[in-house]
Image (tube, rainbow, N blue to C red; front, top):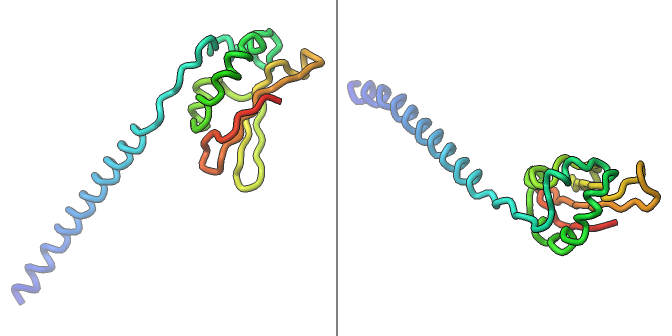
Length: 136
């Protein structure tokens, strides 16, 4: 009888310690995953503030940065949606397709202010990473 009582008294303590261990382990694992985020690349000759402030490409600032952006489009591949938003700002248009594929579009010269409309298209995978960069 004494062993049974002692065993039952220790069981809640063991459960408590294992729950504490799981909580700490989960927290540490989350910190590791968050800190492993790929750093934002720097885009040479692309002024991010001017890009973000030229909504729909009507000011012509985005068109002036078109060539440097084309030359560095590989730097955008593999970035997450949030990293793209930090780098280029909120997209002018976004679309959701089958299998959770998402597209962000940034107008370089938009249809609201030009007859020749051109846009930067970024296709994301279902996991939320930029897979394809195109100029349409």
